[in-house]
Length: 141
Image (cartoon, rainbow, N blue to C red; front, side, top):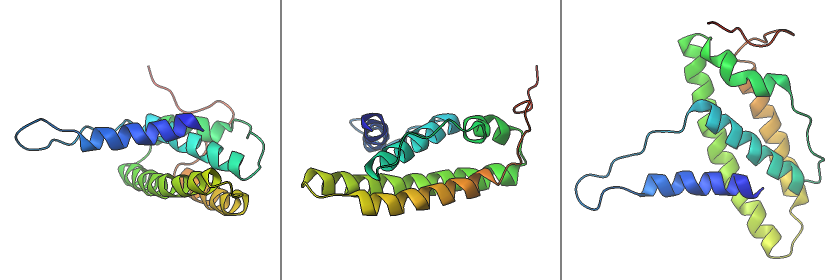
């Protein structure tokens, strides 16, 4: 849970920094595999707040960045937009859940709802790239 909060805090801090004088430059966005992993960390944090046990590592989720690399450009664009949108939702949702928890209230009902939204959105993103079968993603030398 701390890793997720830290990942989002770090990306927000990077976005806010710029040179002392002159135009503010935006940092390069994190690579997709890093953003995907951070999103999965956020999901795990929300699942914990919802009272869900730790999820088993799903090969579809683990292999998604590699499979996406071999997908059509339109699939890559939609997946990146979906990841960015879901990250924004999870950032604000997780912040709210942690604030509720910090006040001593039970965030589990709201966390359960956010977890359901997260899993539905992840499933939609994963469906953009067909599965790779038991051999894993296509690899080239």
